[in-house]
Amino acid sequence: QSALTQPRSVSGSPGQSVTISCTGASSDVGRYDFVSWFQQHPGKAPKLMIYGVTKRPSGVPDRFSASKSGDTASLTISGLQAEDEADYFCCSFAGSSWAFGGGTKLTVL
Amino acid sequence: EVQLVESGGGLVQPGGSLRLSCAASGFTLNSYRMTWVRQAPGKGLEWVASIKEDGSEKYYVDSVKGRFTISRDSARNSVYLQINSLRAEDTALYYCARFTGTWHTFDYWGQGTLVTVSS
Image 1 (cartoon, rainbow over the protein chains, first blue to last red):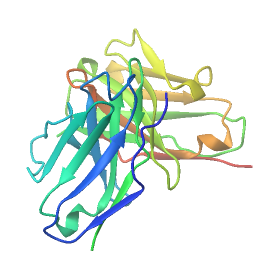
Image 2 (cartoon, each protein chain N blue to C red):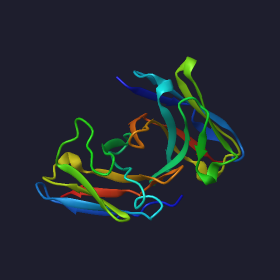
Image 3 (cartoon, chains in turn red, orange):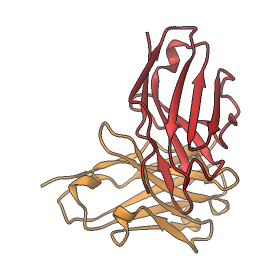
Image 4 (spheres, helix red, strand yellow):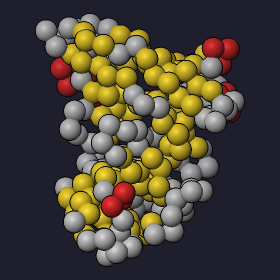
């Protein structure tokens, strides 16, 4: 039940793209296509942005995309907007448990 | 509209107990697994416990096994987390979340209830 590893922070200017990595292990990210990404604004509950590695729930802009290679998953946000500034957490199924990343703070410059 | 509303948090001394509740509405509770996830102040998310649709199976993170118990009551449309033998490191905002079995993720979250363990 180890945590997934994310960079503590990333930043980008409006209109640019940023990518957030999420490194796990062969027991979680590497084994299952059940990686999710959540967005959390200060004082708010997490919001599901990506599930099943690459899928977007209804209402999530297509500026948000994701992928996975081996034990590492990635979230890319293109065409950055001010409202994208938030914390982002990855999450992976790990058998009979779930592992979360420590979170990445995205700053829109 | 799916809604999850947590309650029951508070300030408790080390070794104490609390019972957290999660009131669900806008969906059929007994069709979904449910989960508790916590977030310590300024920290990341941590999965705590999950319970199957019929309550037949329960899963816990190692750090809470033997101290926390997840349960559900379909008649009351509620999920509970009984937390005993509380430690300072259990201080966190506890979220209730709905689990989607198809994609093994959490699609709706409540606003959380704060548990503070301090003497």
